[in-house]
Image 1: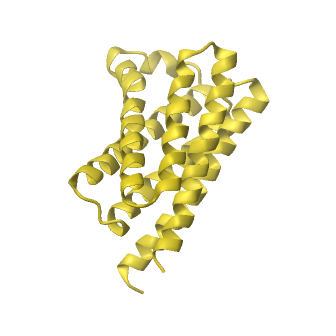
Image 2: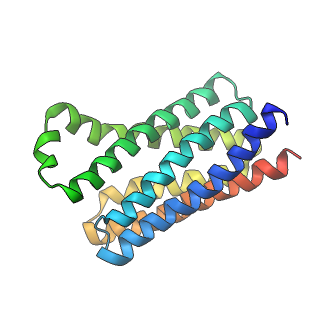
Length: 187
């Protein structure tokens, strides 16, 4: 089996699974605690972002992006790694609240506050790249979902949880559709 086929299979699988789990994790957080994080929801979101890292790596190989598109994928990968670290620390703090004092310092606070912006910026650029590469539907879904999800931070907690759920739905659907589109465009 050729290496490109392995990356293609990996991209299809991890993009679709990561997209589904992204929405499911946010849905669990929303339905159980009205938007407050839960260990189950955060664990699913952690795995989702872990899978999306592999999806981005596969896209690097399968799509053969130019330098600008490759930068978007790199930012998405780095942002996803940081998001995984943040979500992992949230899960750990749920089991041991004393960890909050251990990681409450200026360096980690800056990472927690600004690292997700790398993922958002990378995903916006990746969405635009997909639209330019004739992956228009997944690109538009990812762009809309990402912008809606990012906009949720502008609202009160109750409204923000609804808006972030809607954003995660479109983002998850975009990743699912991207996985399907990889399969359809690479027969």
